[in-house]
Length: 614
Image (cartoon, rainbow, N blue to C red; front, side):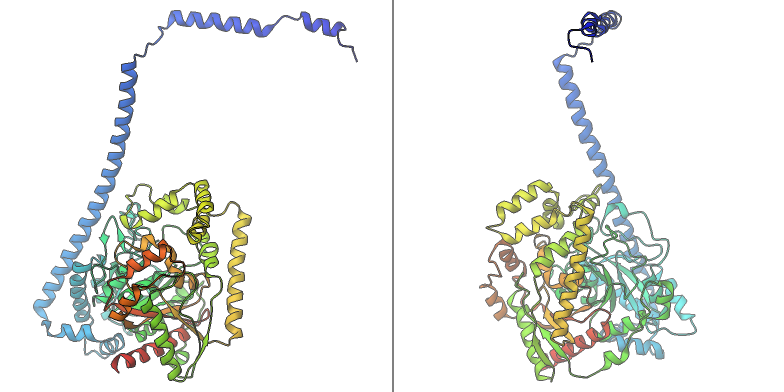
């Protein structure tokens, strides 16, 4: 090693500085270029003009984008209006041949009796179809519940009249929710980007309905993106509750709820991922069943965000009575369903379980400890419990565990695992509906800000703090896997608790009565009563048992909820003014026991009708 200051060091000190030479050459080149090219001079006025021009260009670009969206929406609205006019003309022509005298009779028949008359031939499918289309035209004019009529229903009418064998739903007109695929029809989810792309084939469920002789005749309205339990979107507008036009029919199967409750459909198919069948059924006074996911095929059903498996969506029937739900499930759970979709377990409908009259061991609760429901909904559970006990059933107190944890850590974190980015992306190129603005605004808050707000609000508003934390989503695949494991662990714990009490079924409350229009977007966490059974993937159904009384309304004035916070106060405002509106209860069974759930619902329905007649 050479010492510092030796020859090598001296050589280094005397080497020419090539960096200085390069810098010098660079300056010479720059001087030559300045001589060849005149130096631009940007006056302040020109800079200002350029800036203003850019701003104008941005505004114009935005205006053109919004104008394009508006044109798409107007075209969809025109297409709908043309469809309504065509259906009205078809009904008019039919009425020239058939007197109107049968209308009230047909509309008043329960589904089982109507199906029987169609089977025996005392009523024709054509008469029944046009009677219901005529009524649906009237109902949608009042409530805006039908998104589009299905013109192909006339082809299906001709098709079934040529069939050798009559299916279980022969000649029954059926309405279906917007996003259930039907060939030639749109599945919009209330979003502009899905306009203009009709379905290329029927969903499996629609194929099976048709095979059983049913006639899908209308697609019904939904909230924008489906993730709301109001029923409004910027394309087709707000759907109203036929029982009170100040109230929402619920969502996201709100169009179904309004059409059936208004008498314009006798049987509808909805979907449910947080209460979307059960809430409209509660708000509109209907019976609705959310089966175990995959008991009915989801093939051909669309949604804005796909691939969420740990809290799955389910298709299910909505109708005016429980027997109608049972007939629909019996018709759908057939070899054709199992053949078309091999992922559906081949479990036919068990008539023996549904028809049983054996006493049941029933768990019950009237609050989940997270969102205390209004007095009328808790009264409904109490009165139903007493009626069941008097009828010889055994009633056992049951307390669901850690609902706040389930709502935030298991339910919301599943849907907002990415912090809500996938859901918010669906609004690109869309005008946000006013009913969704409170949700969208909250979801758009940056993650760090949500975390800080949660920290600040925790002592004062713990529910909101936990909600904001849940909306932050997850940061790693490992965290996602762990969350899915927690869902499985909670299901196991819940089933263990159920079996320790030797329960057959559970009676519990459902959110209601119907909210005033615009309130659901402010109270997403209020769906805890229904959300629980989506996380658990248990079959759950809703049965109307009473109506809101003046005494209920008076008691509501003293309602404080579980926390007496702004959410509780908002819930109080949302349900006020509901005297005379339906009050329902929720009936639950273990997975794959839809027949037992329906049997329990039928028992509750029978007892409530007796109480009403007394």
